[in-house]
Length: 143
Length: 143
DNA sequence: CTACATCCTCAAGTCACTAGAGGAGCAAGC
DNA sequence: GCTTGCTCCTCTAGTGACTTGAGGATGTAG
Image 1: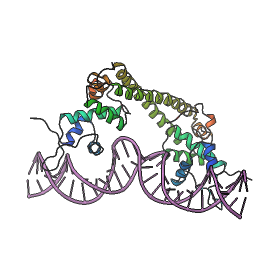
Image 2 (image 1 turned 135 degrees about the vertical axis):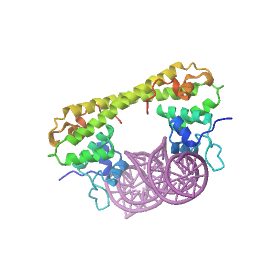
Image 3 (image 1 turned 120 degrees about the horizontal axis):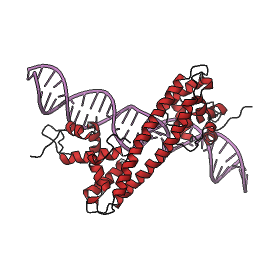
Image 4 (image 1 turned 60 degrees about the vertical axis):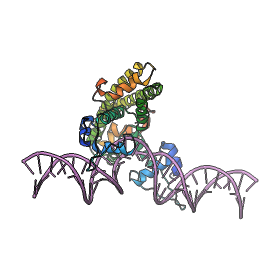
């Protein structure tokens, strides 16, 4: 008497879009579920949990390959969690770096926007700073 | 007596990789330069400036289409710079939002990593928080 | 003259999806 | 039973901003 859901229901329950669920199956992140007579996918609670895990991991910015590792760790609960810890730590470092670099961007964009006197392009700080990297204080920034 | 550079030299001078320069030409961001007898591209100072402008803009996270607009504005200095200002302002808003969302991620990752007792996977905070979004404090985060 | 670096074009691959075409299955109302 | 309309199926191609690779031509230093 297990509950089974159609793909649309799992999608609703987990917040993962229908084509994305099929995509995850295609790349082997989600096991191919059993089908009905009419060839429709049927999911259960465990599949929904796995999808929630995946969605949350993606929201935290983990790559698909990292999620693959994380999922395989979850499947073997007796193992040491050192690897999961390492992946999370690496991501934390990335996030910190990104924040630092975005703050530099923020400062520079603010300077550009504030410096704009709403006149002609020839005297526009926005264009000027873009054209001459030397006028930029943050030479190390990246998107 | 104008200086001309080979593509490799412009690449070095501007920090834009050689295939990327050719790609920019292909999508019409950079005008097709004159060629030598041996069919090699020859660039001058103005091309290098344009590439620097592009690189800096990309570093600030502007999309190619926005850069197209910014470049066309630069080409017509007599015009009002309102549009450039609007593009920069929009980008500033994006950057601010991204910083906010990344800070939420940072907090959650920190909680995961700190909570990890380096034991078995079955009791690992990292895995647990990923599996259960309810344990997450920031339900609105995105990459 | 021979290495070797640099250049050329064109096609395909990357990541994580998203969009669209064209068709089949299913539940509800008449 | 029949029609309407929703959900589902597969498959292919598109997105952005490049990167990679094959296969070949050109330029330069020793």
